[in-house]
Every structure is written in structure tokens, then in C-alpha cells.
Length: 508
Image (cartoon, rainbow, N blue to C red):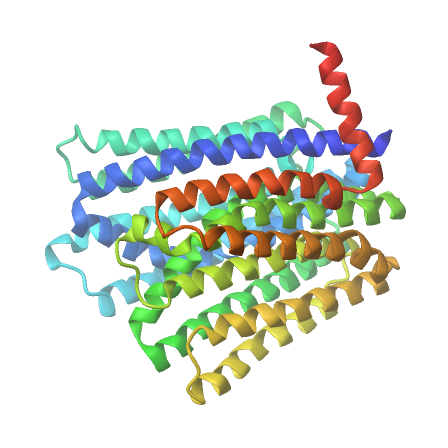
């Protein structure tokens, strides 16, 4: 009964996240168009170039947020609210010091970079500096928001999280519209408004936590043990993110050295496609993450193993439902979007989506590793294998292989990551690898192989175009749904689905 309740909560939270994603994607696309038209190509380019200095540091907030959320969820699983308040206050201290340090570092390094390395129009330098300074302050506000935002996600208040994200993109749309009617310097106005929006969102998040999570409040306290745990865990999480970022940037540099900027452009497009498609499964993963950590903290090992297998299998199949028809129509989709895409773009997109599929299988295991708190050896091992990608790719590129080889190697190594993570699961929670193979890998592989063979046959009857895109996608989903029911669900899961459907029919 408890597990069924948890599954319903995950489903409900996933729905909120998908509503958020749908609204934000549509509004962001329209907002980008308005901003480009009103700012103009030059000012829009200046804002994005200056913003790239901030983006270089923005990866920090992700692992820190995940680390903070882990400690919240762990204590929620143990029903220890006093410790949650302690973690919150110690997190605020860490984030406050980090904000001050990064503010100084980014301001000093960024100003030097803008003044000495960037090629900006002299007459727009003043506006560019405005954009830079306000972007830095916005980044600091976003960093200070992390302890509060992690608290909301840890308590699974996804409805508010979704609402505040929607409000944020609507305010950004309003900012874009304001540029159409103001006669002041539009780049300066846009930068100021973006800062104000970040501040408003921060205030909303803080206010919600104060009103709804009253047991968490700011107070003077100090516990060296808690501080060290937070700092150590965050440090190793950050180390893993730096390693991943370095490995990815290393591949981009290799491609640039051997094949030039055109191939880098193709890789950039592939990364955009992957990021957009990945949003669909990321929302599901955000919803199940708190439950995994709570189950570990409450020592419900069997429920933890079951949910981990379910999350891996459902994440993979959810993403595969988008990736499979997209890959069989990639050439046409890219032509509609870009006109004539750079060479290798189609191949890059396909392989980077395959890599994303493999990663979804591992995502729940990464969460469980975080739940245990024993992440040092895990991060060192995974990071070492990540850097192998650069070494192996260099050898193959030196031998004259196509640039696509770097992503083929990346996909192969991701399978190695998967079994490394399974090894750590066996050590940390006595997770049987046979269970993962039986409940996740076998059904996922069977559905994948059948669908690929089926789509290959169907695709041969059509030329590239709208007709092929529509018919192959429709036919794919017609055959995919029965496969999910027959192969993708366990007997118990089919019974739950059957009971839900019977209940809805009776109510109607």
C-alpha cells in the first residue's frame, strides 16, 4: 500500500513537471524570437557572448543542489526535522561564502576577459559591461536560491516548483515585450529586468519555504560534523561535474583540432537536440529522486531496489518513445529546423541520443549512490573512465577515423559506466545484478530490437518528408504501446494498471 502511494505521488509530481516543461518550452521559443528581433543581432550576440562567461560557472549549482537535496531527503526519510533545519542553515553558510568568492572571481576574471579577449563594438562596450555585471548578480541570486529550491523538491512540492518556473518564463516574456515599447538602451533594460526577475523568483521561493515549511528557519548554529559532511559531499559531487564537463570540452577541442569549426557546429546542434529531448525524461527523474533517497534513509531495501529498477526501465522506455521515431526521421527534422545542417550533424544527433538513452538506465543508480553518502571512490572511478574517452578518441582520430567515432566510443564507454555503477550498487546496498538484467536490461533490449527492426521495414516504404515523419511516428506508437504492456511491465505492474483502468471506468 505504501509503495502504491509512493508511485501515485511520483506520477502526480511527474505530471506537474511535464506541464511546467510544456509551458516553459513554448514560451521560451517565442521569447527568444521577440528578444532577437527587438535587441537586434548585434546586441543579442553581445548578451549571449557576455553571458557565456557566467555559463562557464553555472555548472556549479547543479551538483551542489543535488548534494543539498540528498541530505534533506535522507533526514526526511528518517523523519528528523531538527537535522533538516541544521542542514539548511549550514548550507546557507556554504552558499553565502561561495557566492561572495564566485562574485569576486567572476568579476575579476570576466572583466579581464571582456576587455582583453572579446571582440566587441567599442560603442557598445558600456552596455556590454552593464549586461555582464547584472548577469553576475543574477547568477549569485540563483546560487542563493539553491538551498530553498532543494528543500521544496525534497518535500516533493512539485506543483509549486512547476508554478514558479512558469511564472519565471512569463516574466521573461513580459521583459521581451517591454523592449518593444521602451526608448532607452534596450540591452541595458533587458539586463536589469532579467536581474529583477531572478530576484522576484528568489523572494517567491524564500516566502514559500517560510510559509509552508515553518520548521525550517534561519538561526545561528554550528556543527562542525554537519559542515564537514556537506562540504565533503558537495566537493566530490562538484569534482564529478568538473570531470564530466572537462571530458566533454576535451572532445570538442579534439574535434576542432582534427576537423575544424564546422564539426564543432554539428556537435553543438546535436547537444541542443539531446538537451531538448532529455527534458522529457529529466522531469520524471526529478520526481522519483526524493523517493529513492527516503527509502534508503528509512532502510527499506527491498522497496528501494524495486523502485530503482522501475525508475531505470520507465526512464529508458519514456525516452526511447521519442528517440526512436526521431532517429529514423533525423535528416528531415534537421532540414526543417536548420535548412541545410552542417556535415555529420545527423550522425552526431543519433549517437548523442543513443548516449542519452544509456544514461537514463544509470540515473537512478547515481541517485542511490548519493543517498549512501559514500561517493568519493565512485566519483574517482567514473571520472577516470570518462577521461579514457579523450585518450581513445585521440588515437582513433589520429588514425584518420571519421569524427563520429568520438561519440561511438562515448556510447561504448557509457555501457562500461553502467556496469561500474551496478558493481557499486552491489557493494553499497547488496543489489543483485541479475535482478537489474532481468527487470530492466532484458525487457528494454527486447522492445528496442523489435522496434528498430519494425521501423527499418516501415521506413523503407517512404521518402524523407512529412508523410514519412507522420506515418512512421504514428505506426511506431501503435506497436510500442502493446510492447510496453506485454514486455515493458511486470505482472504486478500490469495488475496495478488494470485496477486503475477498471476504477476509472466504474467512476464514469
